Length: 207
Image (cartoon, rainbow, N blue to C red; front, side, top):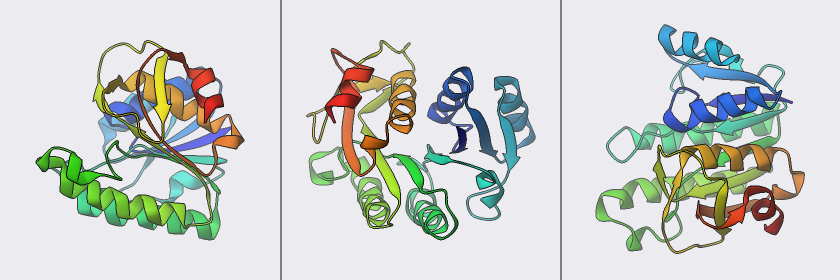
């Protein structure tokens, strides 16, 4: 499969790229800077220079599926990235393809008022964008992880419409993303995921 990764240079995106290449996929990685391009080349991916607020569509050429791993963060330009850019990407995919789209969102999008105050606004923006993706006509999957950590992935998770709370290694989120790409039955599913006691394959099957 040829996978286009948007947000490839971020903490999660790098792991998606590395795991996808290791699994034998061809990966096109959207990056903004030369040093990011060099990093993607070292991983074995094809770097594509671009910017979500400008020219970025070249990363889609020949792609079978797209992974959204970008984010402005609570202290970044989330309105431009988590909001406008994600909606723009979904609209572009609906118009030109590919149809398969896996979006990494965030736990609490459906209940921002229950989340820490500094996250509530970005979660509301993400909620609007997630809804836009869900109504796009694409073969989407929306993954909503808990707090992201840099611990080594344990390969054990808990998934569900709501899982209460918790954290999860970025390694395991990347593995879940790739598992969803490999399982067409996850299209049309939105779920939360944190570290737990269920194997990744069984967790994806349970969706």
